[in-house]
Amino acid sequence: MSDVDQAEQPSWLRAADFPLIALLLAMLLYAVATTLGHFVSLLVPPLGQPADAAVHMAIMLAFVLSVYKLVISRLGETPHDDLRMARALPELGKGMAAGAALFFLVAAIAAAAGVYRIAGLGDAANIVLPLISASMMPAIMEELLFRGILFRWLEEFSGSWAALIVTSALFGLAHSQNPGATLFSTFAIAVEGGLLLGGSYMLTRSLWMPIGLHAAWNLTQGPILGVPVSGNQVHGLVRANLEGPAILSGGAFGLEASIIAIAVCAAAGIWFLWLAFRRGEVVQPWWARRPRLNASLSEQ
Image (cartoon, rainbow, N blue to C red; front, side, top):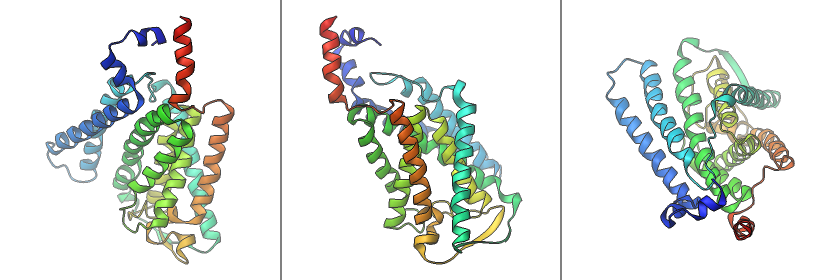
């Protein structure tokens, strides 16, 4: 929409385009979609696990993605779709490769330090349920909320760096009530998820790479390597033990709460942010952009 067209809009519609108002509307729509998806999934007759989990995920995602594509992506002063299908496969692939590689690196360092030890083979027959509940579902739902809604409009209002700080803190707090959570694990998740996932979103301006990163990170640590996923015990392809000081092993929360994971993810996240900065993907705060917008309107 051009600046002239925006100036000719009714005042109530211009108010709805203001970043913080658009943020509240998007949050409300997301909440309504998840609630409807949950209640509709309860109407499906029991099928047994993992079919129940798969059906629940499919219904929930159908509601949330439909609302996102049809309504949320059209909100704000600069509507855009962060889930364009043309970019899905290449960016999902890159994200999943990066997420898996990063956690394998974390596990390798932890094994070398003597805090991660494989005790034997797991049960591959039980991998489908954690694949859904611990990997795919959280990745899609959380990235839609934290990057697709919160980061997007906080960035439009307060700029990229403030949005990164706020969403990182909120992402950490969202995991603060998980089993085995501590103040340090909350800080770790904020640094790891905030920098890595926020940086990948800034770099690509798409949700596909953060979703791929998030899903592969969860998939590698839980269903593959048998490490708790944000404190939640998951049956993996191998049975593993975490031993030694919590600063290295992450304790009951898992390797995500270790200094190893913080260092690996912070390094990768800072690299993403550096690339985004070099590509000119850093957004200035709303109030810094308004003088240029007003000058443009006065010239027309």
